[in-house]
Image 1 (cartoon, one colour):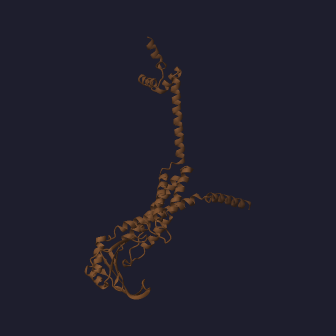
Image 2 (cartoon, helix red, strand yellow):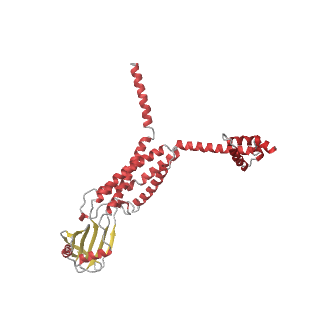
Image 3 (cartoon, helix red, strand yellow):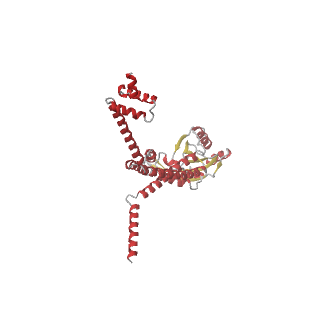
Length: 383
């Protein structure tokens, strides 16, 4: 019975020691794993943005001002220059538009026929008839006038057009909106970029964690603080990129509007209703700079034991240099010290040529030549 209790008590103590080591505050293992996961998730988001950007290069080019003028003329039958505008969104690909004001009425069916004859695939015309209330400022009277909204879409060579007209009585505006049709390259490359970013982030973060684990405490704390700052700053852009990735992977009808893109979240614009337009681009740039600095410090990390060994080697070198300088200074004023230094410089090669070379070096260092004569040389000089 006592043996069983002793065994149980020993096991409990061993478990407690291991638990304290594992759950020590802060739990370094858990923090390291969490940091590696977060870095991988962040790079996955930006990898998806890079893939989306590459996929967007495969889309049809939007018409320029001259092209929009030609398309607008086909829609209205009027040879006039429209008002051209470009709309960007943090959620989808860009759209270009051309507006033309008409005071003589507009027949959407005729415009649809002109596009069909030109080889465009057109949808049926949708017409909504209603009444509009018009207030005259002079006598403050309200008049009800007939209004009409007409719309159809046309597609050709990867380009989608939405032709619509809003008219009250005979006056109104015909708008031509153009965007690129969807391409399977966009979701494929976006998803591929996300996977590659996750893998790259995991490997890079794990390597960085191993390197800074061997560094001294100050260097490790600096890299850790910079990494945490980058993760916090880049959190909002990463969330927006993943939300856009979800939209990219959904099914999309070309006639419903421009396709969703991942990288558009980083363009200036109000991604969230209450967020300023500059928020995501500025956070992306600032977080990327901090991340680059942290990565550079991690790459140049020198292990603590290597730093200690280098410091010790530098100390030994300084000590040896000081000893040599002290020996030369003593040899300048003491014959015995000069003879000992000459002996050390020529050991173990005491050939005459080696001795002569050593004597010339010491004489150049300021040691008197008379202190560096050997007994053979002294006898020869005396004779």
